[in-house]
Image 1: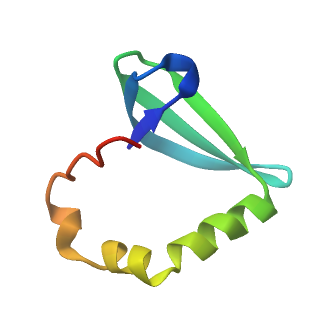
Image 2: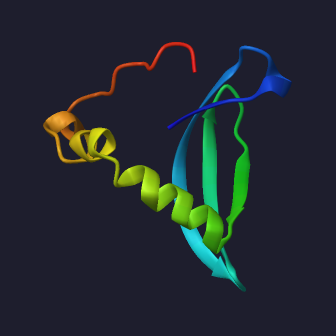
Length: 81
């Protein structure tokens, strides 16, 4: 997983999802950054946010990526994002 932040300029963070926990009406997505710093990032996702993610994943172009064989190889860098 890659992260970019306007607050960090052009710095790109490499990370992995460490888990998801329920806390009240939120799902807490826990992400550990690996490079260039080691941080633990938490994002609280509410029900309206979850529906945005689910709808986005169900778009045909995104479904094609998820159902492809791209899972078995190292992903290509997305370029400027």
